View 1 (cartoon, rainbow, N blue to C red):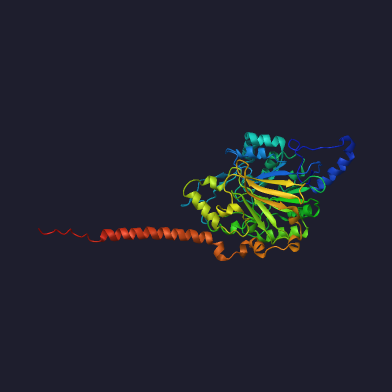
View 2: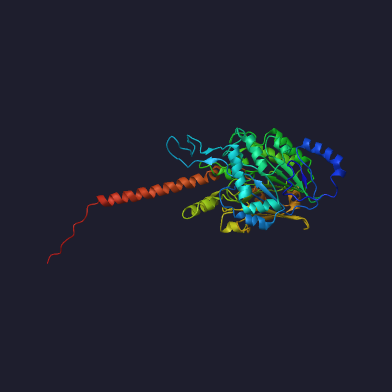
Length: 474
């Protein structure tokens, strides 16, 4: 394993070395100096990665039985994708009055940050209070990035004043070494390369919080320093597979549909940054790129065919405890959620047999997995979203040759298939962007119309003169 940006976790990683430390003293000294300059550490292992799991959105105070399934999957590596805990405090919804905290006309915040000491207590609830997670830490290397709730405040970006303290507490949670360069940089982005030559997997974890400009500003997501680092990691990579972790969705155009009811963060809110992301991938000739993401409280597999010269997949797993269908149980909410998910644009969503009878998303607790078969000809990558029992509920089998630059130029691909996965948010026709709003207001109109009709009919019936019964003559 070659670990580029994060410090070695001695309690979680199992490394093999053929030389004694004293025989490599001078080499390690030079290597250390090079690594400090590159902001990372380099460690070698012999075995390639074959099984990876990842997840997001875990409430530290909630039961977390899903770790049993993660343990049973037996991953070589687990990746936290953000909202690893819920640190901020959420007030009850208030829709009216001077203290309303929901909607476009809210007067007060709904979320409040906490102190670094309280943040550590919440991290410890997960780190030491979930037995199966404790067991996972003992046998599997765990790495991760953050999202807003473990960063410190809902939807927060670079303006959050507690970000530096939050960074140190999170790195403590991940057992980052005290002298790790990751503790000195601004943000928690990191890169790791695993495996021997010809079977290398590079995991690049982005920080979408520390440098992010306000939502809808179309400003920066990563900041210039992180952008330069990201490009350098790709340009100097010799890995066959690049897994890029983003706490928020990259490919999905779900955010175009959620307005005006609620805001869903994604790279789609920063179109210039997403265009730059694809440009960097093209310019560096990166191969085998697969995105993984979290945040949205459901699982989804999306695909974009017009960013690179090969298809780019985004495997979304959310969440380990927080899931939209588990929070809205029973009639009529389950029916409403199913109906709304069918209404969402599916121009990026990967279709499978599930979509014939159910939405192509999974709204219960879940985690994501990779199974890489290096011995197959060609190399295959099984990507799955799995339920609380570890059963795959969404999945795709990807062939590594299909994820190489120039794939679309060398293959005859049906135009309709490509077009399905090419429509960005701003390319959607207006009636598709607002179909959810149209259906909502149409349903409200029908309901109100029916109610008014019933009231009018009732009033008319009450006002209608009653007929006196006629008596028959003897």
